[in-house]
Length: 83
Image (cartoon, rainbow, N blue to C red; front, top):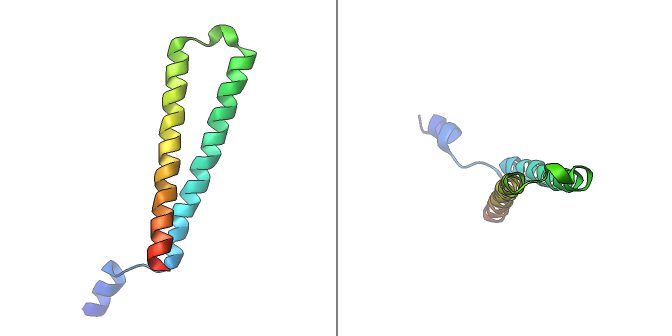
């Protein structure tokens, strides 16, 4: 029974930190895509760039940045604590 509990609820190895590294890379890519798309929209369609669009773009950028930062922080904590 103890062996089963260790398998199900026991600590993970340091290889499990790769999950947070992968999410960090995905959100960084999304951050770059969001920033690039915003700049292209401002340059190509300045008449459609309203205050509402700017606020939505900034909120989207902030949310993706926050997800990137949180996953980077979790990856750092995971890798340092299991090293």
